[in-house]
Length: 223
Image 1 (cartoon, rainbow, N blue to C red):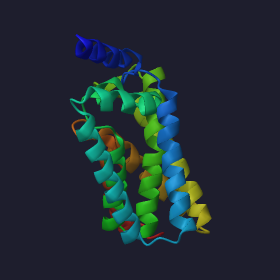
Image 2 (image 1 turned 60 degrees about the vertical axis):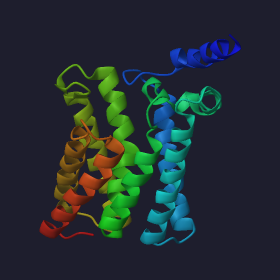
Image 3 (image 1 turned 45 degrees about the vertical axis):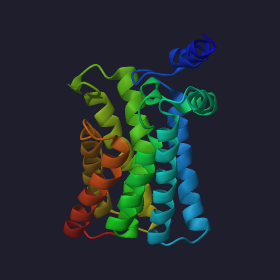
């Protein structure tokens, strides 16, 4: 009897967790803040791409281990939900959270691509992903797919374009070539965001963006 009461008390938090269709600003702020903090530490500590990728893989492994422990363990689930509930989705109660995919997506990107392009792709994930989601939830009336809208994809395009412009200026680049490059990079970023239908977007956005930016940089060498 006592065990049943415990299960009921633990399952009740699921009613307070956000759904994918909710605005969930805390999660979006967490998503961006975590990425900005990671980039700050990357430069502050002077990490190499390989070492940063290794650290991220370790974090991902720890997160996956924690998820596996809490699955089917009411007490562990309750502690986890009480701690990270404001940043969780309801679907993550019995599924992996987004963090290991976030860490792995950036880690793979750092390994596969040159630093300037890997970091630009990472910035797409940090900022374009949550903003596209926010716009899509609030204003996404014209659906491309079930969880993707024209409005959300346009938001991703504009954010990625703007980020690339600022990024290029930080490298001392100006002019028409940078503008063309930025628009094409915006298209790449928005396509990578749309492609996250069956695979977590924390993986698809940085990895596919990094691939697209690498090809683009062969055609228009800037970075």
